[in-house]
Length: 165
Ligand code: FES
Image 1: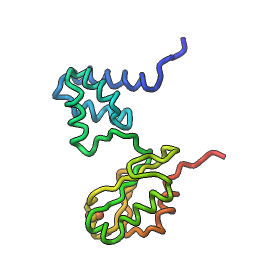
Image 2: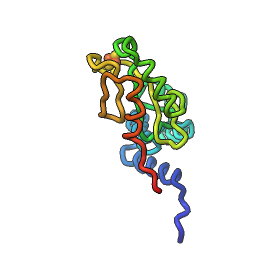
Image 3: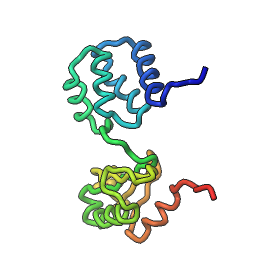
């Protein structure tokens, strides 16, 4: 028999299995949200409602936690997330111009994924590397320091998916 499950249904099933495995209790909310974000990439209202129902808590409580912690996201992100520091040290050394160049090259707005879903650009506060200002972090660990706007296209190229010919 063909598998009629959609990807979304499979992800909800996986989330439910996880909730069963740790126990559907309100004090497990953070763990459940982390798992849901790992599975779905972000926490839509539909996912938040599902979690509220599963843990038997109001959706407003779920929403409150999601919006309190900045590692949770309610919007889809690109596969490659580019964080551009706009902390004081980076800002005075041109971080805002670096951010503008990324947005211009990728044809997107802050926090919104590009049309192909490959990238999203996120202005952030101090990344803890002020001596290398202005700083950009690509993904979780690729730091680029002393960035000038004309270096941006080369950085983007490194992370573009290789297109099939
Ligand atoms: S202000 Fe940008 S790394 Fe500190």
